[in-house]
Image (cartoon, rainbow, N blue to C red; front, side, top):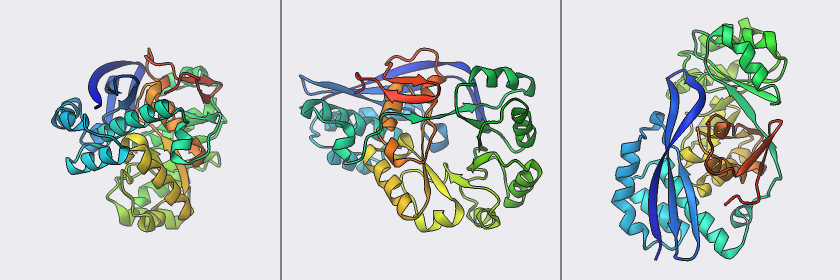
Length: 330
């Protein structure tokens, strides 16, 4: 019989995390712990308000299924239980990942071997520049100069000014994330045309996820590579998504499980879509989980643990933007 517990943790941030829809100075996440009496393991839960998740919902849902969790013996049983009770994706991932970590510890196998995927020693992540006053951008860019790729958070109102300001201080490849702040394909096209910057790798989720017709128009314009984020959660109509975007951003907290994330990434490649592994604001426990999927990604955006002041786990090393798992991971 397994014993499950839920721990709430506060993560203070190194700077204000401002994106188009919210600003945060700290984040409340959860760590779910599981033990079989001999071996213990943990998984992270990073709730996101964009998907109807908050601390109260996570605690309530965990309490609802805690007794049933004690009788679980496989990851499929956890996924079935979560589906039956409509468990939020971040909680579902925390539960499934904790059990995967326990099984791999017990059987002394790598997580990549458990899922039958290749392992990678390291990956290079981008680092995100949050929305901030223009006069603060120069100093911020200097502080993250070691990263090969910069990701810029923008909203529709300040996008052009922000990217041009960044370009004054950096010639590195840029990835732009608008977090659904543009409202039409024509607005996005005008932004791209006026920007006229050949150093943009891609534009991530410029418009709300429900504007399918606008995305058809935008992709057809062939102005820039488009990556879906909010348009894909735990399920994806790849035939339709491939008409809107050139690639997808898979996050474990959205996918709801390792199992589903691996499936989404593999399916994306069958549809000739680029793949990206992203994250929420998470500790290195969550980031180390995502690193296990590195071989399935064309782009990596796993800076979430670098934004928090005091990482409680220290499971991931970062050197000049290169991430690698420590031996103690999982």
